[in-house]
Amino acid sequence: MAGDGSGAGAYTTDAALSRLGFGRFQALLLGFLGTGWVAEAMEVMLLSFVGPSVKEEWGVSVGAEGLITSVAFAGMLLGACVGGLVSDRYGRRAGFLFTAIVSGVPGFLCAFSPNYATLLALRFVVGLGLGGSHVLPTWFLEFVPAENRGAGISCQPKQLKESIGNSNI
Image (cartoon, rainbow, N blue to C red; front, side, top):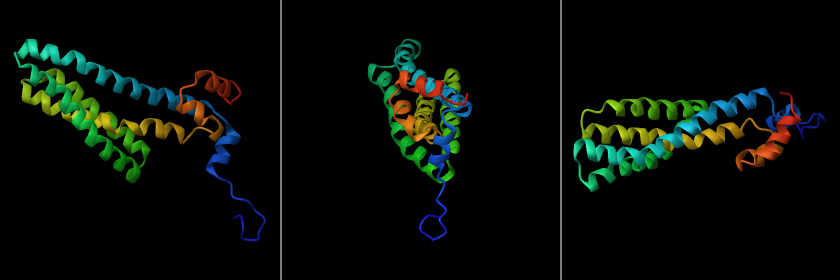
């Protein structure tokens, strides 16, 4: 270790990532986590279509229609806290799986909701999963070389493409 008099320097994870560059693993991870980002965006976008359909199908009031979106966002608020705790305690992979399962399964079950109350409960649980999705970019950036993290997080495709072009893919 550095400073112990042996002359050997510490080899950090950042140094290893910088030496290896942006490779096949990072590209696969980006594709994998990108699927999660797309699913999250689709779930949020879906909220604008669900309300009017539920209002027409079940004849709920305008306030009840708005409550569908509100419970999803309330779930996201709580899910952001829970998702962070899960990923800090059990790892980013567990945080990603939490997000995928807790938003995916109830999201699918929403299509089979027999009544308004069940739909509200399921949309809240979907919100819990969506709230934990902040784990996705964090997990991705843990495997990106330090010199490429800025381009990766700020979605600068030109710089990211240049760094990928000069890598070991």
